[in-house]
Figure 1 (cartoon, rainbow, N blue to C red):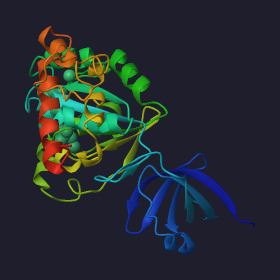
Figure 2: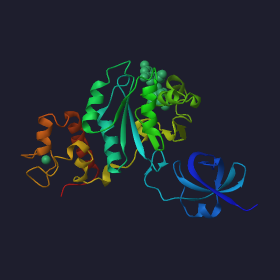
Figure 3: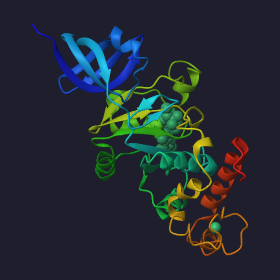
Figure 4: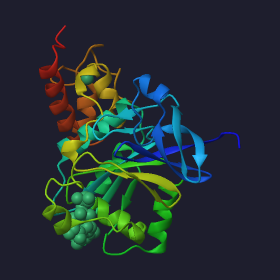
Length: 297
Ligand SMILES: Nc1nc2c(ncn2[C@@H]2O[C@H](COP(=O)(O)OP(=O)(O)O)[C@@H](O)[C@H]2O)c(=O)[nH]1
Ligand SMILES: [Mg+2]
Ligand SMILES: [Zn+2]
């Protein structure tokens, strides 16, 4: 029988084996020697070519060029970042949330906000903040999952590769379990008791959920799409999408929107068209980026 090929997505890495999800089913593969020599190491999300050697078995012989890649945790070809924020326990850390969004914007990765634990706190302020900033927001009480909410997620996830990210304890794994109970992901106390065990390390797996693939990433601390250092001070304000209509309207062309006179961004903050919280995050990131590299002239 001659060798046949299948093309699919790498969904899991374990002990040198890559599991590739293809239209012909799952294949457990090893990287072919010649490909290994190329120095590229496949990660989940890679589009891989499998040379089929037997039922469910083959060699991973190639991966397609990546449209983007997260470094920690390693995931390639993201279509979307879902930033999960709890209304309470733990409450939102806006600086961290906005940094994540900024890094996604910088990479042109669409962001959707998901608000959990609305049974424990009021999520409407967070929802309004990010709706006003221009992001789709899904408010969900993790205690239930009605048909309308499920449809909302189906719409958001189908046909896409999504990374869920957000602080530990916000309810990411619980949410995936509610969308697809067979996943049976460890949550809360269980994952805590495992400490820094396999569920909290860099292990990433893509799960099929409502017609899409989803990476349940560990907490915020572990997700670093990219260091801020590549973002220039001209680019940073543009990563805050609601600032865009005002950028270029300031008195000075090189306005950093800090203390300059006649700053259109600051004027928009003062009259409420830009939220104070988002502007504060911008200033914090400006400081952080300045510390990382000398932006000054
Ligand atoms: N009251 C309430 N508890 C939730 C909700 N979602 C998750 N939890 C609980 O919050 C804890 C942390 O959830 P988990 O899914 O492990 O969070 P993760 O670290 O983001 O994956 C668990 O004890 C969950 O049962 C929710 O919507 N409401
Ligand atoms: Mg979890
Ligand atoms: Zn300005």
